[in-house]
Structure formats: C-alpha cells, structure tokens
Image: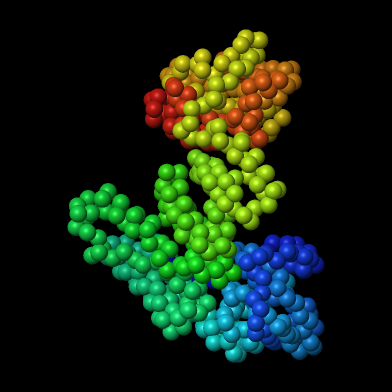
Length: 484
C-alpha cells in the first residue's frame, strides 16, 4: 500500500470562525522560525483578488497560522520575513473550500500560481523541491486512480483473472516505491527525500523467507508479522524533526499501532517503548512520539490498552522525564492513572463491602461463581436504561444456572430511585447492592466516571474483560459456559 499527501480541512463553520481560529492559534515550540535567510513566497491567485490569504504550517495532522497577506486586484500577494520557516508541508488557505498544500524545503523563495485552488491549476516557480513535490502529487493522483480501477476489477474477478489483477496491483505498488527511492537518490538530504521515504516500507519477498518458516502457514505468518513489525520504520528517520511539520509521522504511527501490531497490550507495549527509545535523543520528536502514544493508548478502543496509558504515564510523565508537560497536564494524567490503575485487565479485582437492597451486608469475594459480572449504573443514565435490562434478559437469565452471577451496583444515594429502577426492569433475581456513603471507594477503584461501567471476573476474581459489548459477553460466556 502507499500513501500520499494528506489534505486536512479544519471543520469550522464560516469563514470568520476559521480566520479567528488561525489568527489566535498559539505557535508550538517545534514551529519557531530559524534565524537566517528569510522566506519570500509570492502567490498569484486569480480566484482570490483583494482577499486576505493565510499561510499555515502543519504540525502533525493540525495546521497553525504562520503568516497572512492581502492580495491585490489581480490576486497577487507576498508572504515575506527575514527568517526561514521550518521545512515541512504548508497550506495556502483562503477558506474551507479553497486551499492547497505545498512542500517547503531549504529554498524558500518561490512563486505559487493557481488559477483556482486545485492541483490542476497549480504551478511552482523557483524552489526545485517544491516543484518536484507538485509533480509527485500529480503523479501519485494518477496512480491512485489506477489502483481504484484495479480494486474495482478485482472485486468482480475470479480465478486466473483475479491473480492477474493482483499482480498488476503489486506492480503498481512497486512502481510507487521505485519513484520514492529514485527521487530520494536524486535529492539526498532534502525535505522532499525525507517526506517521500517516510512512506516507504521494504516489501518482504517470498524467496527471502527462510525455509524453516515455510513449512506451515503459522510459522510463515509469524515470520512475516515479525518482519513487518521490525522494519516498518526503517526509512522514517525519527531524528529528522522536519517530519513533525507534516501529517506523515502521525499517520505512520497510527498505522503501526492499529494495523501492523497485534491488537494486544503485550504486543503493543514493547513496540511503543522501542519507538520512544529511538526518538529519545531528539527532543521534539521524543515529545511528539511519547505524547501521541500516551493519548492513543487512552483513546484506544482495544480492550486492555488503558494499561499502556498507565505505563507511559508512570514511566515518562509522572517520573519527570516529560519536561514539556506543565502542572495542569500532569494533574490530569495523574487523575486518569488513579482511576485506571486498580482495574486493569489481568489484575485481581479489589474486594468491596456494600449493602444489598434489603439491607444485608455484602462482599464481592463472598461470591463463588465461575464468572461474575460487575456492573455499575445509575437510573438516570440513558445508556444504562438500555444496557442493564438487556444484560439481565440476554446474559444473566440464560447463564445464571451455568455458573454466572451478576453484581449490579447502584452508584447514587437515592434508595427510592434505585428500587424503582429494579422494579421497572424486574431485576430482583441478581445481586443488587449499593454503597450510599462511598466507604468502599468503588467510584475510584472501578472507575465509574461514566456508566455503565462493567467488568467480567473469573472464579478467583481476576479481571478478564471490561467495557465490553453484550455481543462480546454472550459469545465469551457461550464458549466457556456452553450455548443457550
């Protein structure tokens, strides 16, 4: 697969809102201009006469204001300063519908002419790198069209025709890789070369797989997976901080985390830490990679990946290694760790002392079932009103005689509302408990900041899963306790 320029359109309603956003965006440290020869970027925009036009620079997938100009009656304007801009990917921006990207390398004296705001109408004078990048964008667009056509044909093909089309797709992909390498060799050390080669991943040829791994499909898969994992960043130079000024680093990190690595905490953590270590000698890249991995772990929908957030938070932020993090950021990270550190998958669930609906004392560890579902809810939560009754009907009732118990924890302190909820949905048969004075600290221990909050425990009360769907639960229990 290959990727090209990522066009990012900031979603703000109205031209005035967009301009206000750009004008007041705080510059990031990595984007501070470097002293020396200045930049002069002339724009000739026939479609934007007498208009305020913005020059914006990328940092990851976001764009930040760098300069503004007012065009004359013909659409000519000049961005000019006596300092150089950081090399990277930039955008000429008029409004949400009218903008285009260009690459800015070491030579920052150039003229951009565009009959509209399209790739077709754009020309570059001066700055060879910028011109070559425009040629690349056009060339890549044509290859993408070819690939789309081949994908359509492949979806309809059968037999030998399918093999032939697959071969054409591989050849097309190889031609893109060849282009990247050829241009990189032609312009070594340039921003253009860094950008192009950051896309590149060496393909593993079947003949390069050792014979010992070709004896069965499982061994072959292990070798191919390990190769992809270990070589994915071979041609993306983490020491080259110019790449921070493009969307490429974020895109490659996301692809690596979500599509290359096995979606398991034990697989992702070593790979993530290896990336942080590779970037550690380069302050701005180190900051970006570490921050991105922390946020990706927290936002991940992969069950158990919150453990990676806790690891990175402790090892890099709360340990003092993340010098860039201010007190507000550290406080928020520390708060998240406090809410997550006691309920990670694989941990022993904390015992809690509560009280049943009829006033009897309750301890979680008094349960002795093969599996226990621990669910925290509040009656005025719309999702709880859907999830909890379905949990009772579709999971508890079918599996209660096969080794399952449900402990349903009411998280508020209004007993009448709690009782009304259990009566409304006929929830009397499972274990209903509460802790109106929060003496057990369950809200922190089991992170009930959002509800429903749900956990699956084994007989020894080890946490097997959390924040899952009912479909996952029915499939898991059906496999381990027998079908219904």
